[in-house]
Length: 377
Image (cartoon, rainbow, N blue to C red; front, top):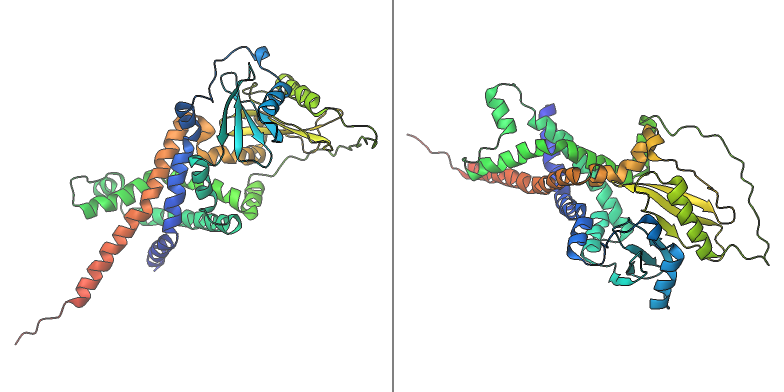
């Protein structure tokens, strides 16, 4: 009885979420290698590496972009390393500006709405309105997680012998197409199971607050941090806040020399607006993880939620900050990217091969029901 219910759930849940799963899997395959493809196909991302002290500060990058595009408001500069150009984001604009970090030369002005952005929108909300699409993606991911569990139950052999092992772990390429299709669904689904479960769980963490809270609770919770009384330094109306470019330079230097542990020349610095009292920066960007920092504009001291190095994080902090890396395959560099790409590709085929299995059984059932019993005298 339980096996029949499991098979029924696997069938109808698969039919319900098949198309979203195919789209999410294919777009995921493309996005895994987005940065690698861009580096190979463009001439403005990579630059000739020089010494760290030769990199120009954010103020120089700001002035160069402002001179080239005076009608745009500049939001932040993204330093990616010694051999990469600086990406400058603009407020209220679809354009990104790439600048040589050693000469301040404008290398390219690129529209953010490119092919990969299109794929990203499909992956995040299926090209639907964001609010609706994210819910569809979230619940499709939940259904796919359920399909993986019910599929594992269906795959599990009743007896572990030589024949069952061959059927469960090998594809009979010389068999008829129907059998090959079954093996592609059954065997490849098993091999992709572990990575698919990780992708689903991390996707659910991104989609639903209740999933995030569950992971936090199950992993032991965040460590108790002592409350620090913060005394806000008020700025009189007639006294301007510190110059935005000077502050950005000071924070950029401070982050690289005092806070960064990994990939120290990769830093994001936000240019504060006139009345902003805190300044955002990002460091330790390596293998899909990063460290968010917020500085008091006047004292240049960390303020708000203090995020330490990921090496010092407890289980909960590590899981939450590594969630994106675990979801995308960035966690282990090129090796895990390739593994995730193959697993995602297999996931894209599962609804298709599963549908063909169901369709074949349906046609067989219809043919049987149409047979007229012969009469003997």
